[in-house]
Each structure stands twice: as C-alpha cells, then as structure tokens.
Length: 92
Image (cartoon, rainbow, N blue to C red):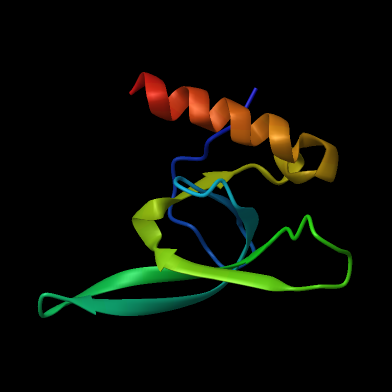
C-alpha cells in the first residue's frame, strides 16, 4: 500500500507527480512567477525508464508533487505506486 507522507518535501525526499505519474528524488527548490506572485516549485530527478545512465529532471509547482516513502521507490514498485496513487486521486 502506498504510504503518502504528510509533510513538506525536502531535498533528498522522494516524490510522485500528480499529473504525469513521474517518480523521483527532490534535488532543488525554485519558484515561478504567476500573476505577480511567487509560487514555490520543486525540481525532481525522475526515474528514467528509457535507459540506465540517463538523467531526467522535472520542475513544477510544489503542490503538484506527492511525497512517498523511500521504500516505495524500488524499480519493481514504480508502476504499482503510480496505479495506487491514480486510484486515490480519482476517489477524491
């Protein structure tokens, strides 16, 4: 079962993107300006399913990321975690 953490994401934490289902590790903070307001963003190094040794990053608003327990991030669990998250998001 997916363990969603109720806390702010820190560098080194693992996160799942709500929309894309990308899973990875938080590597940096940032911000985006929208309508004269600074909104916090997270830059996440995502698990790249295309190939080993390739690095991919996604940056989006911090409220678009869901924290997950490190134990949930093993490569054989990625699709299962995404499926569980999609089930939770559609029930809300």
